Image (cartoon, rainbow, N blue to C red; front, side, top):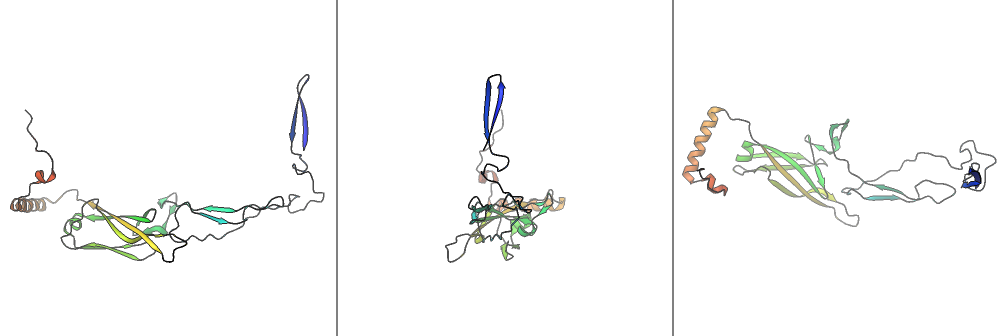
Length: 229
């Protein structure tokens, strides 16, 4: 310990204590210093640890390596704790392109044990059905989507497929279970229709509507409009 006394003004002194420059507050010095460590008794080196991430591990999981923190002759080494975080996949942003989590040019999105996917359909597919799609999952297996002829898909409709989500991480479980895959259908409508096609389509729809007594205003549940006086 080193004690310093400073005069702040005539008759006024300040005494300051601090660690010794020679021993660093340890109370002893090394006479014959090592050429490698310079008498510090430790050398900084980079050490590599292998991290095993199990399937379905959620964000925030802490993996502990006992006594793998900084070592010194003056204390017992602590633990190295690794906190697992998820990085959102990005396509070409800042030079980072996560091919491992990309499938069919799109990304899965994870919320806990469930996965979320957007599938884009055209007007014919959404309205008339009779289509099928193969979605490549994160582990490479294929999930088949589709509708039979006449089955309609509404814009924004969500299909839930059980057992196709993330693996549910449970170190004590004997059998691996999976969450759900939520498929949201995005229907893309054409900007405009060819004039002849639009005319035929309108006539066909109007004929069908009158035949079956379809009232769009009544079916919509909206109040009947009244002319302004």
